[in-house]
Length: 579
Image (cartoon, rainbow, N blue to C red; front, top):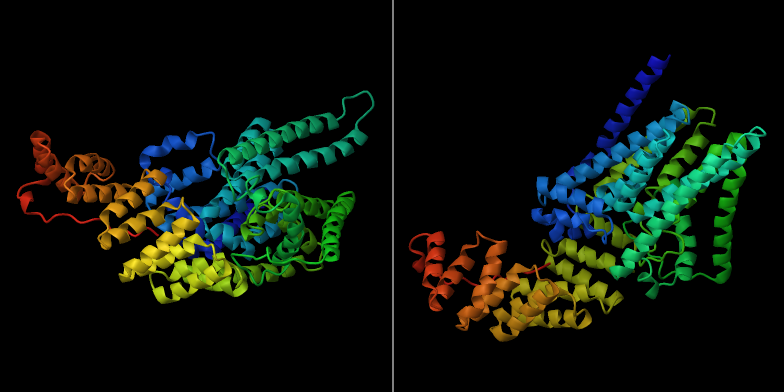
């Protein structure tokens, strides 16, 4: 019998793995999306020599970005490799989840819950959006920690929880959930212990206390690092834009949207707009009471033996959702990827309902088929940037960022449609600096340099720290012949981004054209440190060295270039529009 169960378990595991590749394999052909550009533009990810950066304790999500670093070593900027890793991690999470559930529940229940977690269309965003690998890894290490706890390997569990935190901070909800479960269990253990013996509750309370200390330590670390980094999108920095109370009240509305997406996942959207919704006070009170009623129902069911799993799943859902949907403010009120960890609880909840029905296998088969078809259909939206953002603006036409990103999807293939999208973004948000910037990019490509320069001026007036606008302003001014003003723009670019070597090269060009060869030389050396194979820069360096009387060094540079280099045309600036 044991051998038969193990054989069936292996077969079911293989089914989950194959289903995972069928459902999400289409993403291997998808491009990068949204914040994925932060990965490929991160010098610590792209520079092979910067591996020591990932040992910096004053950075968050270091483990996640280290996996991006490894991805870049293998596949460069090819998005297929990044998507493959995301899909593999999601499937690994499903397999771990199935194995963990089988330790507590029967195989049929465990398989249904694991398949729901695998196939639910809400999973498309965290899997197909490369940047959200953080939540996939947080779940992976959290599940490893839970497996370790189940095997009484506390120190390994603590280490796995730490890796989960280094993947994404919201994973602190998992050890918090375990601590709560220990405390609930300790009450039952205390009642069952024999007189005169140390109650079993003591062990659970000590474990709960240790996990609570871990949660507090990791939470304090996250808050401290966010303050140190002056992060403005989440935590204390975001509180300047939205107060914790206002955020919490808004999240009471968001919770109902999340629940709707879990029960009826249509329509879905990359963006959700809650900032403009201001309901009456009575409605807010009803929403809060509704959330409290669901939590109370979870406690009530958890105290009943036959409904304990269902009740615990309800409580677990709200605990896992708490880091992103409570009083910790964020400039974004809702994202589907925030449901990835809570989906663990929802999958168990859904499974607990299905197995109570008269024909659980038939119901589960129909449900999983519907979920799978919906997931594959939703995945087609992620096949291109244009499709993704066209879908998004249909659902949130009043959100400026959605129109801005739609413009980004069109900027190369259809600049005129991109211009319409950027102007719409500016109508919704008049101080949208990056929208003005991208309008400048469109005009710069078309040769409308004066109009482009005006847009870049508007951008830096709104956001003086936006270095790409300073760089492109310098390029347009060079095209207009105003080289000395362009020099100031390039210098400003380097002040904001010292690693931007094209600005170093363009500064060298300005100095070279003005006959300031001695000032061009250090700039050109810096460029060649970054790009040793850049022949134009080496040619300018050789000429500059010759004109400053440094004959031996000039000869070395000429030899590196080869013979007849004197016939080469004078190099030009790097127009290099930065997007």
